Length: 484
Image (cartoon, rainbow, N blue to C red):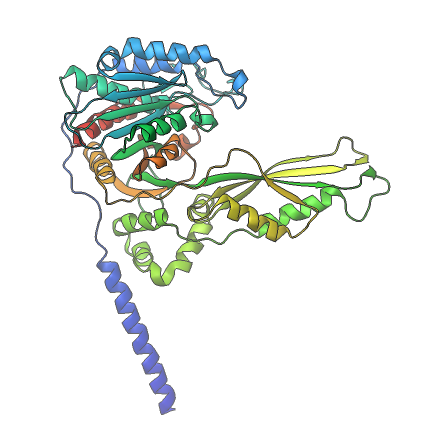
């Protein structure tokens, strides 16, 4: 009995010591937020809404089939920008890349490494527009919003950058560093003719940017759990993208005399294996940084978890994987998207195929995804192949750089109540092409989004609030000045 008491006391002592260590680490977690005074007021004229509206009315749509693209719209868009931002187009060196991409150079006072500000001219198609509150390319301006395809993806950012530069030039400002404005015209279809070619030009010319800032994550309201504060998410990496095709050829025949296994049943079994045997969840470097920055800003309970992830990682992963968005942050996701088989209801098909889309977590490759699928399927009758459009995950950009700190500082100036947090971008952007010349690539657009706003990207009723758009212009205006 005495021995049992000693064991209990010993284990109790160990538990108390461990708990004390965990609590101490929680209480010692220090904030990584910059202490910044709210920036001085910057007057932005309401005419900016008219210029954005006009840009939206030009349907610079990128279709998957290039033959469907209306190239005259991109030429009209170029002329529109030229007319509406005369100082930008007269003072900056303007270069067309593959006819419609725009690469603009604003010479700085010093030889310091330049900064690249990116946005894209093209927008995704609209199915029919009948369910929109306002016509998709109307550019309607009402009391609160500017409506239309491209308002937030991505003409809002493009026009806001130009508004900021035009205003600064009008005030006689010359930047410390050289700025490049890189406006691709095919981001929605891989960016191979626009941003990809621009990055190659940087490589050929020996230009190494200090940092690159492109569209990406935003300021969220009510979307980040465990805090009621607005959270500005800066993408330090983005997931990769690969679509695999699973196909099978076998004997067909009449449906009245089916074999034990058919092309469809074999393929269905393979799809089920792939979807049920998902890759393991893990915390990649971008999510690790997310935890470090967010942890000190949340309540004691969640902070306890984040501060002691070395011990409680499985608990954290369990919490993340219980939600759709959280799961996508910690796992290479698996999504069957298309099935093709059969020509008639009473004919057994000779051929069946399926496509499965994977969004790849940094630290993995498309080859690893493919090899894993082959291993899981384990059936030589199923042919697994990659489709075109592969994007490997982006490298993770550091947070202890001039670029990240300048973006962080500028967000705090314009949005003082905001918590700034690095994170992983689940979609992709043109910025990934610049990884051949720059390690410091960040993905952030200064939009303030609610849950409803997220659905408007590539969806119906795309719009931007007037207040948010003016904040975008002020953000880029401040950012340029802060890049010393």
